[in-house]
Amino acid sequence: MSAIARTRSGRRVAVGLALLLPALGGLTACDPTSPTVTAFLERSAVPNDPGTYTGRVTPVTAGERAAVQRLIGSSWIDVATVPVASNGTYRADLANVGGALYRQRVVVRNAAGQQQAVSGESFYGTPPNDTVAAPIANWLAGRQGTASVAIYDARTGRTSYYGNNLRYYSASIAKVSILGTVMRRAAVANRPVSATEKAHAVPMITQSSNDDATWLWNSVGGAPSVQAYQRSLGTIATVQNTAWGLATTTAADQARVVEATVWANPLLRPADQAYARGLMRSVSPSQHWGVSAGAPSGATVELKNGWLPYAGNYNVNSIGHVSDATHDYVITVLTKTPGTGTASFNYGISTIQGVTRLLWGQAPTSGSALR
Image 1 (cartoon, rainbow, N blue to C red):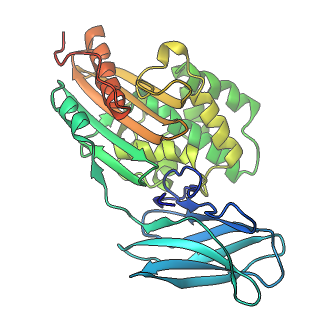
Image 2 (cartoon, rainbow, N blue to C red):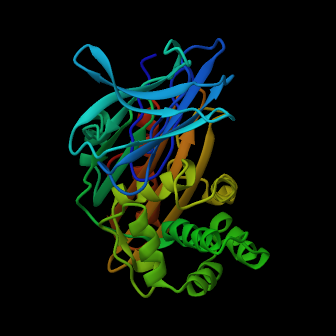
């Protein structure tokens, strides 16, 4: 029961007996026998905001209460208790914990105060960030141009970074944010994503169609609307441009964009998230490069790539969510390579794929010189 989940900006994650993953952290029952309690920690804005635990007790009996507990020293202390509804659900609000980081869990007690079930554990707060593993850092240090990386590892609940203070032109990875804005707009209007919107979304993501991206960009209101959506995810560095592909961004911001399609949050509906991930699983085979490299056979790969020769450099980016039975990663790798020709384009791809091959314990497949 050592699984740990990070909590951040409106995402939901399940951990415990099951595998976990980032940013609105969560818990699943540690005891597989009945009764059980599941718990999910919802966050509505940015790290260290107040949070809310929601979940379900199975089976439910009259008079039960759920208690959120925090590990203080060697003791589990109740920090919030709420009644369990007749359908087994509960909702417990938590105060802002500032910069602290706590281990927490949820227990359910019967009407007599006897403990019936215990959820898994997760962190509440902001776990410290890491630098990427030395082999990845060494690989990137030997590459020409620049690269930035953000890798969220659900096993630890932490994000590791390399070169995260650098900004890059988004190119076609901006299309994930455009799609997110479309889905958010539909959710606010309490309507499905329309057939017309989907007719443009499919080629925009699966074939990286620029014309369809521009149609959707215009339909949602362009830069101000997409910027507002991104800010609501907690992105702080991305700056929009009147041309969507020339928005500047960071690896950390793009990780938040991907995470918004993976874990429950107040902005996107689960069905819309599943739709977006389905498109990202269905990109054209010719564009199925980048963060997919090195993933084991049978792994689920959801990605979007972007490439743009501009201002004397080739910007090659890859963002996505890759998971198998034992791993769960959100990975964003942004690169800029000198030159605007095919050699620079391929070099950028090799830089990205070296990162993810090393992440999965494989050796990069290209040399360190740009030819």
